[in-house]
Amino acid sequence: MSLIGGVSSLRELAGAQQKITFGSAAVIGMVLLLASVSLLMGIAVPDRRFIAYAGYLSTLGLLFAAAENLPIALGLLESPVVAVRLHSFSVCLHTAAAFAFARSMLDMGRQFPRMDLVFKALTVVCGVACVAAAAGGYRYIGLPLNLLWVAFSVCVVSLCAVLVRRKVEAWPSLVGYSVYLAIGVQHFAKNLQWLPYTTATQYSYAIGAIIHILAFFFALGWRVRHRERRALALSLRHGERLEQRVNERTEDLRQEIDQHHQTHNQLAMAMREQRAMLAMVSHEFRTPLGTIGGAAQILSEERLGLAREDVKREAEKIARTVLRMSDLMDTLLADQWLEASSEAMSRHPIRLAELLHEKVDEHNEGNAHDRIDLKLEALDVVVLADETLLHIALDNLLTNALKYAPATSRVEVRTRLADVGTRVDIQVLDTGLGFRPQDLPHVFDRFYRAEGVRRVPGIGLGLHMVQRIAGLHGGNVVAANRREGGAIVTMTLPRAGCAKGGGNSDPVLAASVLKGQGLCR
Image 1 (tube, one colour):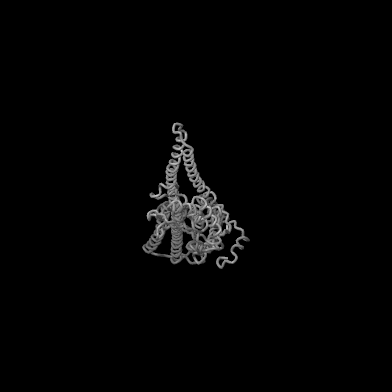
Image 2: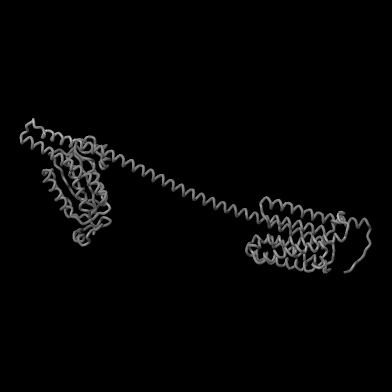
């Protein structure tokens, strides 16, 4: 060491000392003010990094004050030994705070787990060094502590460089620690007389310290902003997910409500059909039972002395009534059977002309008494159908026409091709009263009967069953009135080879009956 003496006036010396004191006090005041702000932010956010930064700035302010001899200048310390020990203690304390703050600032527990353990140990070592410095043993630990500080600065700058490659928002920390390393190197170079002790070097040290603490404050603020933006983005994503879930749940509830309404409507329709069926059954069975009861009472009355012809007439009345009740029961059972068998149809190629001849002859030999005429425009037509169901449909069509037409009128059955030969129409025409306009939309409804025909026996299932059977075969049925009077009911069926699906049909038989037809192969 060397000592250079000089002589200055007291006024000049006091002015220079006052400038140095005011500059140092300004830096220390700014550091302490920033420490207070950081502490408040750390409590308000909350964020432990701001609290660690407040502790780091507090030790830095103590180090500046001790280095510039402010305690002595302010008259707080009268002993040079105490001043030296205070400065040594502040160096050790600041070094410990620097290790602790670096762990928090760089998030070493997650980013650099192994270095985090090293920095924890060094923080404890610096804490022990604070006790030694306060006891006056700084001369033994000064050199190792300063070398440790240099190694710490280089290591932290390297870790910041690695962290910038991972996260670009870590660059303010790299700037802060780079300046921290630069001013530390300058301080050691000045103490070792590698750099001259001038006003420029002294102020550059203070300016560098201000820059590095502002860089750290900016890094912490940017981290908070990044965290808030990330929390906002996460909140928006959660909001979108919540809105999506609300929309999905709303749609599910809407579907459940629609299903509930549909179920309610089906239940109401079933209840209406049940009430209609009960009313029909009570009406239709009451009259036959009354007839049977009256005839039986007449037959059992001995005082009347009935002749054989009278007994025969009453017995025939009972037989007809029982037959009527049997027909009603057969119709009801046929409807229930159709419900069960609609999913297990057995379709086969059927020559329509042969089936119609069979059904017309059957009815003409029965209750029709040769009133049915058959006119076939389409002679060689094959349909792919369930024979049992088709028999039921044709029986209901013919029975309906015979029942509501005058007893002496003729009933006509026709066939014709439709839709360019892909479909066949089966028409049943009568010369009765026809359908009332208000009844036409409901003639195929289950258990529906027009008011004008309530006296005619029936339960309103015939045309309904025809419609269902036609639909099961891919066709339809239409009711209308004839211009010359009477009704016309048309059942349309696809021709074999033109309908979708073949059920359990025999492909060999289908090929044989379709041979020779020009359409639908």
